[in-house]
Length: 128
Image (cartoon, rainbow, N blue to C red; front, top):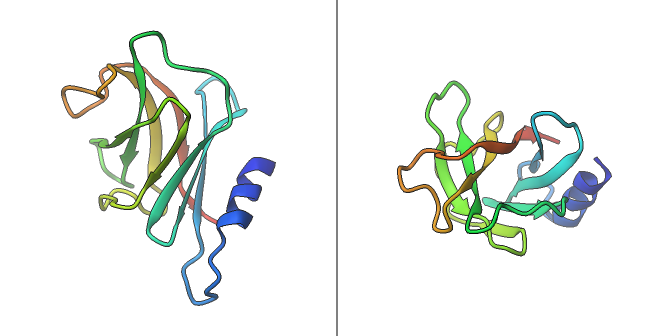
């Protein structure tokens, strides 16, 4: 949680009229230890790796969003090997209460538009 707070403070908008950032701490289903932290601020999503775990050889991590009350995930991006991702063009699914998930996929991402590999990290975007 300290890492999430640090990311939030570092990205806090200078404009007091700007909406508060949304934060998601993504963790493995069987663990409460943070694996990734996502911050949505000023219409940009920033994802930072908090783990040293890497995808299996010849695979990549892919980030997904599932809007509240939706049943189908929306692909956001294949996560670079350095674990840092910044997205400025976001679909409507990326809102307060949306679930973010990371799955293991082929190097270029899922060929089907939905996760083909297991979801290894998940969390929910919440207002701070």
